[in-house]
Image (cartoon, rainbow, N blue to C red; front, side, top):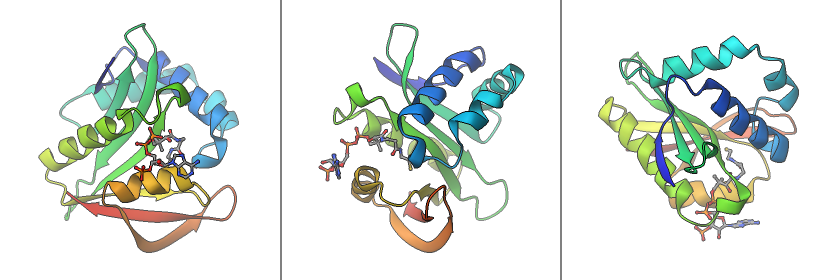
Length: 163
Ligand SMILES: CC(C)(COP(=O)(O)OP(=O)(O)OC[C@H]1O[C@@H](n2cnc3c(N)ncnc32)[C@H](O)[C@@H]1OP(=O)(O)O)[C@@H](O)C(=O)NCCC(=O)NCCS
């Protein structure tokens, strides 16, 4: 198994892992399973092509299980306007692969990538009550910015860390 970037021809592999994340942890994300299921197939192909293009300040890091399926994801984007802060999303590791360092590797890969694009730091949104992810993000140096936004239930909290 290894962490790598999603390839341009892997739109449907990403769809499969994203649907699994939304099915197992619906409360963790801004998007619902119903919304993702309603997305046309072309959207997934276009997303994969976009994040695989190394000229775009967008990337999707995935955990390749080595059997043709993906067991984890982390999306990153770097703003094209100063101060070029990065944003992360779609953080997920399959339950059978948790507490094994894969989430750390995804985070290191995405932060290293954002830093190479010149990002001084990265933000992400954390849904209320997600204690496990909160512990994980704290260990990686994230702190609340004070910004809140409506979540599916309650309010999501914006976190930031320097790179
Ligand atoms: C968030 C996620 C990617 C982290 O990956 P992971 O492999 O579980 O992460 P780790 O095991 O390295 O770290 C989890 C931390 O939570 C702790 N933890 C484990 N179970 C916990 C629980 N039930 N409640 C609170 N903390 C818990 C661990 O001890 C560890 O803390 P530590 O580093 O201080 O010891 C993964 O749990 C996941 O995919 N969760 C579901 C989706 C999700 O919430 N995504 C984030 C969206 S913002």
